[in-house]
Image (cartoon, rainbow, N blue to C red; front, top):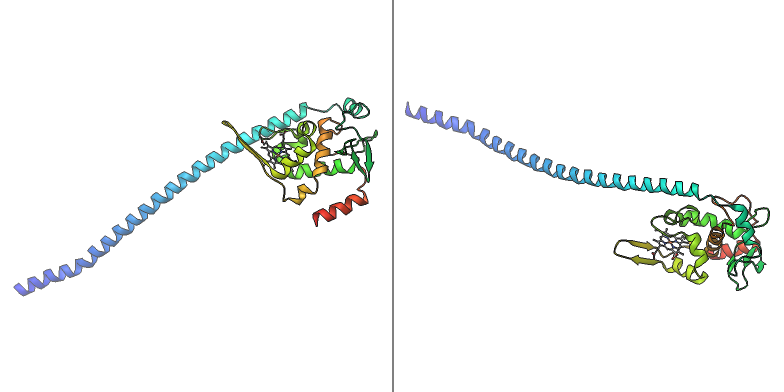
Length: 236
Ligand code: HEC
């Protein structure tokens, strides 16, 4: 009887051993899955936080845009009086002294804008309107009006020296303060800006005096042959 009993015990052990191994494996697997779930949860938490931050940022951006749009509506230019100012009693850094191939200059050979009595703007100003709105307005606001992030360039163009103005655009500028950290990027290697510096400058000057109102100028002079030549040479 003995051997039979022993062999029965042995058989039982032999039979249960694989179950024990399998149970251990299942525990290990379950532990692994739990760890994975924990990781995923941490990741999801981080994502949720990020999404929340993005939502906040988007909300404040939307509020800012709404405020800017409202400010824009309130700041409708008075075209009549503005135009009168640009005629004869314009300051020296604006007043047209001569014209060359559709480009207007002051007495000091600084580019300036010209708006005819019927509202036709010179080609450079019109081109400047387009270039400004493709490269600058995201930070500086539509129509040179400025934003909470970057200054109103319609004012800068009047107050800053032409060469300083060009220098900031070419080399950029960084303002690091206690409460703000704003960066004007350098555009020195961007042909879409560098080839149109004068265009952007005269457009913004015209915005500064309100000789050109907000939005797209309705009437413009033709591109001169010299302009096309220079543009092609610059854009290479
Ligand atoms: C990424 C945002 C951004 C873009 C795009 C940008 N700017 Fe600026 N710009 C700034 C900020 C910010 C400042 C203020 C820097 C400082 O405080 O020194 C600034 C300053 C300037 C100034 C100096 C103004 C002053 O009154 O001192 C000029 C000029 C200027 N930008 C021209 C331009 C032009 C022209 C373009 C388009 C070709 C342009 N910027 C595109 C952010 C930008």
